[in-house]
Length: 336
Image (cartoon, rainbow, N blue to C red; front, side, top):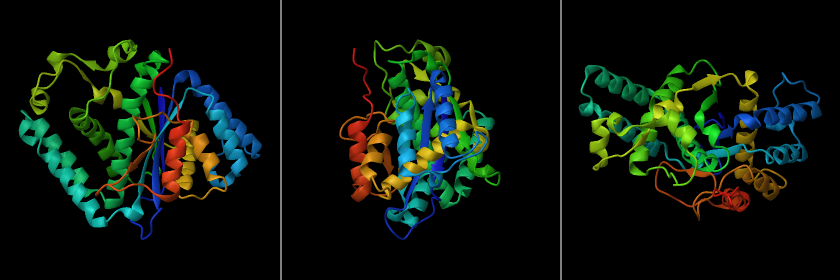
């Protein structure tokens, strides 16, 4: 499958609430990719554009957006969202979160038996430390997105399209070429951070679901699991997923060249506007966007609303949008 990733918002500190920034991941099985691209092309033609043109949310009327979302809702592609309200993020808390993350990476240095491994830890922690608070916050949101895509697609598609789990092709909007530090840090950090989270909170694999295509490519045999991971868990690990392999085919691309990234851009922008309560028919858009998402365990909404400090409940238009999306999201478990 292809996973197209784009974001909406600047991720800079804000003085007022509802300053949402959003990262969207649109997972498209190969069998649905042509139909997704055809829907984008029809949208462009309706706007008097040619296929090579990019369209932004500001170019669409609400009615046009609703029709487009309705079309996407017919496909077996799924939408994932990580969003953060920068109006509720204390810059000092962000810096403290970044410092703790750097320290947690460096804590793995003694586990490295070889100098090459220790040098890799030093390089990685240095890159992470040099990120600006803005790029660090964006990186946290993107890694959270990659983690939820990996966890949810394996469970969702093992019941519906098992063969689509034989490959993960991540295509992320590069935005501009002046941010190699961020892009390289994200590429290097994602497997390790997602792995660390998996040790604390293992992913769900259900007996009877068809993981055969996934396991051929991404399952690690017990004898190949590093000793330090076994020690970190505190008990023998019978099997594990090679997250490096899951994320290996990751590329930062120009959205102009990849229609799927253009769709992810529209969806990220739509979710950002929705959370801010800026549509005339906010409830109607929430219902249509929710239809593209997958249910999470109750009472959680199908999107991730992040906070780097103390937890607080979403409120206002964001809370209502999340509730409506939860009611229209696709069932995780397929009816037999």
